[in-house]
Image (cartoon, rainbow, N blue to C red; front, side):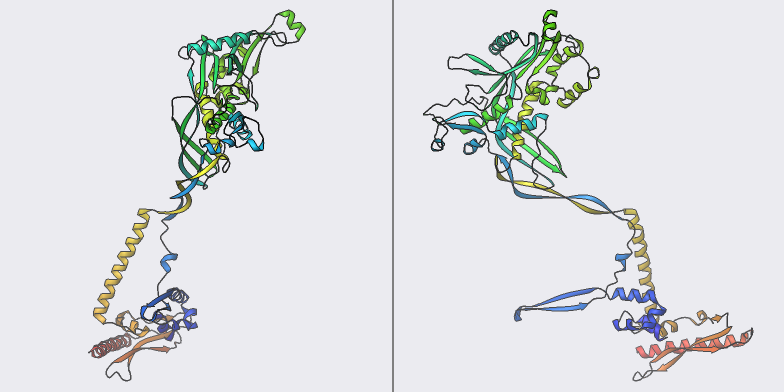
Length: 555
């Protein structure tokens, strides 16, 4: 009975948990009480008048079992937390005259000596090596990796930079290109004469007398009277009609000053950069031809260095040669063969649809349009890389990729500006099944309501019991529900009863206690019905007596 009293009083004093008999006989209840007393709370009380803060340590009872036994409806899934911070991001300095020397090799007109490096007039000698190396890297048609601000982040930035636009050539330009092509057709290479030139591109260069020199090979750092434009001619199939009909097409690509609007995104190592360009001026950027006492425009030098490096990836020729049988035997060459003398064979422009005429000569021996499936695997790969686009589309795209890839060289070709950077972090988010969560909690609320109502009814009927113990619970049980327990193995008989004891200092208030009478049995002896009836009557009298005593105590 003492152990039962400890169990029912475990919520009023933590000292009741020191009863080891309670732990042995009622382990589950002992652990529940231990959990209820395990929440530690620290409180602070501020005393302004005393200029001090009192730190109070207190234990607060709180049953934390719901944290261990929540309904199995909550699940975890991957989510992304999006935040925006103002941060420094790189932008290109190619349009800043102060940093023009980082892009172009421009030396003083009177000589490249230390004392002359600060002179106002510069002679343009070509791009710096950082530009030429970058051009080779982006020749595959992709933007080079740029260092992200965060692993998953994005931002937008705008800056001025060089761009390239391609147009159909006017009649005057067509006449210039045809003149250069006619001279190219007269060139003999190892005894073979060109029969067709399906592709030819060059940068026009003029001397002081106005004579044209086509620059159709890669240029090195040197002074030149060149231009910022590329003249192209190629044999193109009729784009609107099927069949083998083709004609010579003429184009010219020029350098312009534009504004770049970029959206840069990174996601776990994957880079996605998109953007547009808008022309600042409809006038092309001219080639620098500075003479004293002119003050050189270093932005013009930087843009021209960029175009120089780009044009080196476009110029050159695709020629189809033929020779007669006598020359064939003496030279050891085939009667007809193609020859590519252009850096295009190393970049994405090789898959342009404007070059299909040349490669079809190699497939069929005569120019005719072929389906993609009819081409060899290598040619198919080149076309898929370029997506079968024209030169007028691929060359401006290559210029765009080159300009954006310059952002890779932070600190050399870039400076920082403040922009809003969107940062995304991978986080664990929690979800739940609505139906699976509502049902158990509705049941819990219904049962809790029933328990509260039942408790109120019992309190009204029996009165409050703030100092309840095991005797109080047993005393509240109706007499006909108290049965006699029998131990089958020993056949012993136990009789339970309740008696009331006077409490000191409480007058008529008497406290119930449980009386257990042990009657050993020998053999199987049946109870007499009169004796059972007498016991039941005695229990009823004790209950009535207990009820009167509690009423008198409340009064």
